[in-house]
Image (cartoon, rainbow, N blue to C red; front, side, top):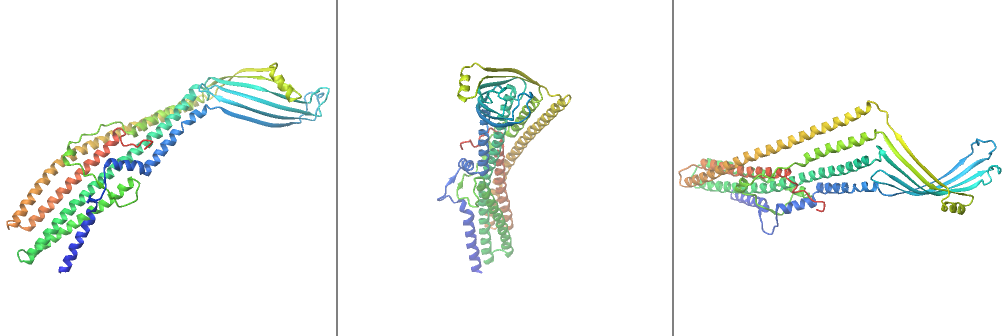
Length: 487
């Protein structure tokens, strides 16, 4: 019997040392909430992915500048033409033609496109009649400059280009806002994980203290039974209480393990072990005195508003392709024509054979009532997005109101629970003194032990609830926890 009891005590001490290991501050680093959130910013994979997505979106804006960058173009072709000449007297077997050209083109923000180039064409008339074609082999070459400008409508009009640029910027802004919102959620979840572990460890500490009291009470009762100073049923009652405390300690340690896993996952670690010592939780007085954070516009509401604006721009841009278009265009070219390349080039430099072109081009889609239907579809889509935005505002306002209500109720409960805890502690202390002098029975002491332990646990759970509510409320405030691009 003695050996069995000795082994039981040793096992309890060993188990207690395991549960208390996170609480032992010797040779352990203290990890504050701020330092932990910094680790989350740097190591959380979801945040890393979100930051990378935001950075890639920012770089996409370079496409706007690329649209107006100069473009180098070139072309070359060979042609063979053996069709019959319109004039029977101008007989030949066929015509061989080789053409090459190179140049630069550039589009401006006003929609004007300018092309500057140089073209060379070598023509050979095979078996041509010398009477009509004394020079069957010759070169045509020269520089040219062309322009076109949309006077009204068109995909290259200044208005369309401006809307296209704005849409691209809005798409990037929308993506960055969405990624920022994801980062906020991750940081809020990380803060919740930190406090979850803090309170889980406190719960283990209380469970250990309660079990230690139950163990001492059971040992004391067994001694009384052995000395025939009390009934054996008292030992059964204390043993039952001890088993209940064992169960509470097991449940508390299980929650601590789960909290440790969530804690490490937020900072990118797949581990059960949290070696650091965490900050002690705020006192009940501090939580009761803490004020609400300032409520702002949550980012998912801003995302809904950005979607509306983006849809309107997209609708305007899409409808613009059905507008009538009027373009002015022109070309100037100085020509050289000779049987030799060098002579043809000299002729170009003389500027004696220019070619000028100036014209207008008009186009108008004939859609009838179809355009009204297209316009109506975009208006209906925008209306739907406005309803989605209103629903998002309503949902976030309702969630804030719910958090406020829960916080008020939790603070009220905490005040009552603190009073109950104080009363239960005083009641237990007095009852123990009475039991020592034989003025109370053990059953009454056990009941008071259970009531005091329950009061302690209820206070701790309510403190944890209030702390988590404050953490969730931060998502409504300004983006204080969001990692920067350099972070």
